[in-house]
Length: 423
Image 1 (cartoon, rainbow, N blue to C red):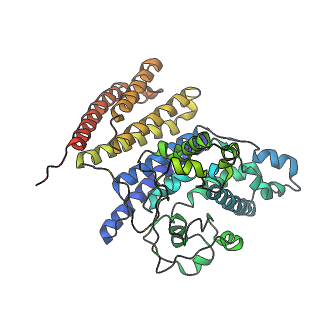
Image 2 (cartoon, rainbow, N blue to C red):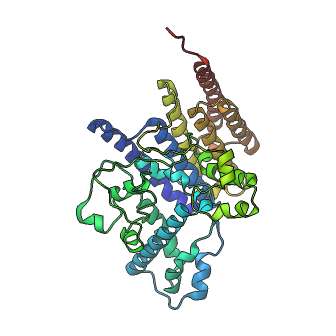
Image 3 (cartoon, rainbow, N blue to C red):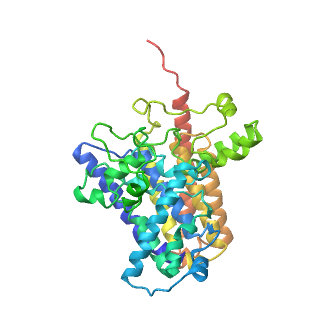
């Protein structure tokens, strides 16, 4: 956890710079693929994901180390070849986990957030799940365990493998000649994120495109079929925490409403999107039928609201950076209190992005939790040792943040109540 947190101290600003560079490049070229609220939603989603991972809020039913200790037929020392084998095995496992996530109702919930953006850009690469607390698919690492690849090698290669999937989430790079035959490229991944019927559930590989070609899920980007992005049942919110549990909540409601006992059980393991016929008839859910004719989710956003959202995001990144850089010193259970604060923070300002009246209540909750932590702990998780005045600054920030959020929430509600007068 601690080591991963320190890696993220360098990775987070690097990703942010690249996302902003793509925004600038799109503006410069007259082909802007990054909408402000969508970008902030994606970045917020990334924050919740890495916070969950650094806090270790997931468990493996059967760990990789357990497999190595029991089934290894040989043991190989750490070397360049070992790391290469580990990378290939991780990629093979990633393909199958990815494929299962796309094909099975229950597992789609852990992946829906990554596809929820109706844009395709570097920011949407950061939309990663917080809803999977149990990792079930260590079994796909059996090839590495049989070869006795040390668990420390897998732990080292895993974040490299994850970060290597960032670059190809862009519409600014065309086809890449011979690399199209070897690696997952932006062209391949545009197909994967598209909801056109020609492209749906294709190109599931993560680094090497060979897995799709071997197992029949490859689809080339067609010159006459422009990819349309998102999911067929759009999430209609900027709130990444809501998005992470939206599909699961629908499954729970459908299982409860279904008359058939068989349907109540099988809904979890049916193909993604399947609903019992009686439930679908009584409780229809909007689904995009014509991908070339639907309205992307958007909300009214003044210049001040857009600026305030960025103030909140940058402040959030500072809070999270402090957690990641000092997690060993903060210790347990305090680091989990800090994590809860981060999640309330994200929920509060993304509700404001959605123009929800309850944004003020969530912002007040964030401020209440933050101030309570300062008075309970005596300062902000030991930060006074570095900056003796930080607690007073944070209390002032919490108060100002509630006031600004209240004013914005009231303004949005007032604007929404206004009925245009016909001429």
